[in-house]
Image 1: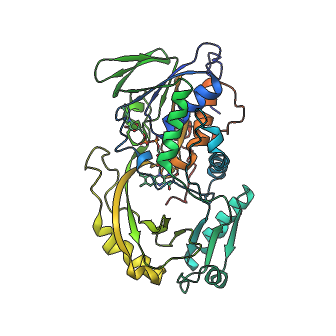
Image 2: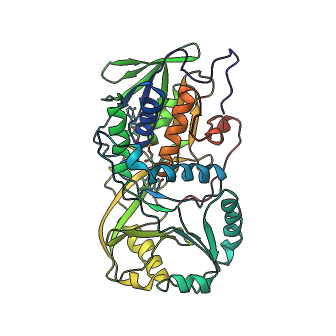
Image 3: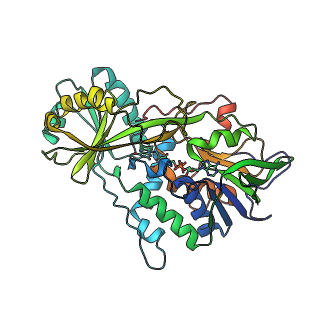
Length: 406
Ligand SMILES: Cc1cc2nc3c(=O)[nH]c(=O)nc-3n(C[C@H](O)[C@H](O)[C@H](O)COP(=O)(O)OP(=O)(O)OC[C@H]3O[C@@H](n4cnc5c(N)ncnc54)[C@H](O)[C@@H]3O)c2cc1C
C-alpha cells in the first residue's frame, strides 16, 4: 500500500471531504466512480471527452477473463472480478433492472511445444498456488478432449476448468456507468488539458473550453491517453497505445466445447455467437499514436499472411473460414512490466491513477474499481488489495513482469 506521507496524511480522504474528480469515463473510471458513490458515499464527477466512447478500449475490447497469469496479483484480481461478474445482476441493478453481461466460462487453453512446456509448468504451479482451477493436459488427453485440434507439434497444454471465459464488456461498462449515475455520480463531457496544484495537492482539473473542476482527490483513468496527464504531475508513466486487430470469422463447422485457445505462435481464437473472434500480435511499430491513424485502420494483411495460415494449421476446419468483419482498438500498454498501475501518484497526497492494464483491464475493472475507491476513500472493507500494482514500482525500478500477455 502507498505509505502515509511524511506529514502524517490519513490514508483516505474520509475525514476531510470526499469530492473526487475522475478523468476518463471508460470502464476503469466508471467502475471507480460506481464503488466510490455506492460504497463510500463520495461525491464524484467523471470527465469524459468523448461520451460516444468511439475510441475507448472499453468499447473495443474482446472482454475475456482468465486466471492463467504468471503473477499472483493478477490471478487474485481476476478471481475477485469473476465473483463480482457472476453476481453482476444484483451488484449493479438499477430500479429493479438487472444488467445482463452474458458471462460464459468455457476456459482458456494455452498450447505449448517442447520449447514452451517448462514455462507452462512453472505458470501452472503459480496458478494452482493462487487457487486457480487449471489442469495440464498431455497431447493424448488434449486430442481426446478437443478432437478438432491439431496436436502433433504440441508437448503440453493448460486448460482452465472453471472461472475463465468471456462476457459483454461494453455492457459491463454501461452497467457501471448507469449504477454510478443512479447513486449520484455526474458524467460530464469535458476534455481535460491541465491539472492545477498547490504544494503537494492537486486542487482542480482544467478543461480545453476553460471550465475548471475542483476536487479533494483526482483519479487519472484516461486509458491509453493517461501518460500526458500524469506527466503534468512529474510522473513518467510507461504507458502507450498498442493497436490490436480483432477479426470476426464464420466457420461452417462447429467446434464443440471450444475454449479461448492461445497458439504457441501467439495467435488466439474463441467462439463468439455462431462465429469466432481471432487475433494475432500486431505488426505495426510500437508505441503508436492513439489519435492517429483512424481506428478503422485494420491490418487486413495480418489475417491473410499470418492469422489464417496459423489458424488452419491448428484447426483443419478453419480452412473454410470467412472474415465477416474486423475492428481495431488500443491496449493501454505498460512497457515497464505489462501490468496495471493503480494507486497513489508518488509525491502527491490526493492524486491517483488506474491505467496500463496491457490487455487485461476489462476483466480487472471490478476489482481495480473497488480497490482504488477504497484507497481514495480510506478503509479496505471487502475491496481487494492493489499493493502489487502501486505506480511507485516504476521509479523504484521494481518491475512486476506479467509474461502471459495475449
Ligand atoms: C482489441 C482489444 C481487446 C481486448 N481484450 C481484452 C480482454 O479480452 N480482456 C480484458 O480484460 N481486457 C481486454 N482489453 C483491454 C481492456 O479493454 C482495457 O484494459 C480497458 O477497457 C481499459 O479501460 P480504461 O477505462 O482504462 O480505458 P478506456 O476505455 O480507453 O477509457 C479511457 C477514457 O478516457 C477518455 N479520455 C482520454 N483522455 C481524456 C482527457 N484528456 N479528458 C477527458 N477524457 C479523456 C477517453 O475518451 C476514454 O473514453 C482489450 C482491449 C482491446 C483494444
